[in-house]
Image (cartoon, rainbow, N blue to C red; front, top):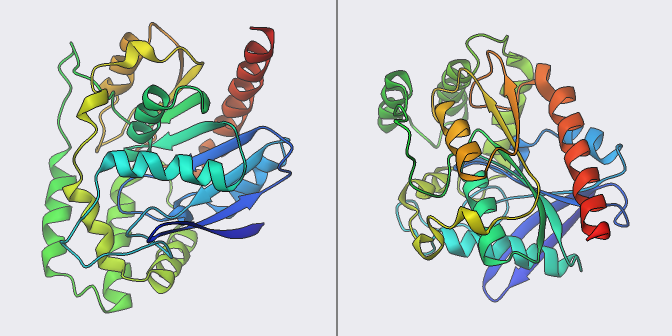
Length: 288
């Protein structure tokens, strides 16, 4: 594993890479309010062991990347899209395969529309279409909304109180599959300790922008893999079907009993599916 700071004007993005740079590159894009640690190091290394070059990074307002005061967001979703291209440029990559979950999946879709020549395939996990849907999609589960409401009473400067609160949320994500509590607590504590300002991650709740590229999914011509858990309380499974409808029936991987997460039980299945997509996309590109 190697570390690298990507600098653009006054923006600093902290990145890590795994594997050989000569292999097909994958950019892992996490969801809102989480750093690159969301992508477990072992998960990243296992992907790299499949002859892939893996990059994970901290969003603005997470981890070691540029942080702003809580409640003072000065960027939009298109800036986060452009950040991904700056990472590719700094790594001297002409393109990459984008793997995004939740907010990361929406960033990946916008990037594939705005910078179509830089994205060779899309893997969209637990996300929603960057477009209107003809389907009726249930809203976020009430248990998640109630959990977020309790965050107003958390002392975000006290590590143990943050860990206890965040663990409660982790249990909500994984009600049908056993949560690895020790691994999850380690992840939360490491996230808290390395963050420049842990509370700033919630600036993501105020993100807007990107509407110039809304309702343009028909422009995405590259191979797409949709992965979604049947028990996702944040981004309902119906979103996966909506994406499939918009993208004319591309690949869909259904994870039974999985929530809004990358659960350890699903790692091998997810990794195999991503590897197969990347291989097919590379072959399609060179044959075209």
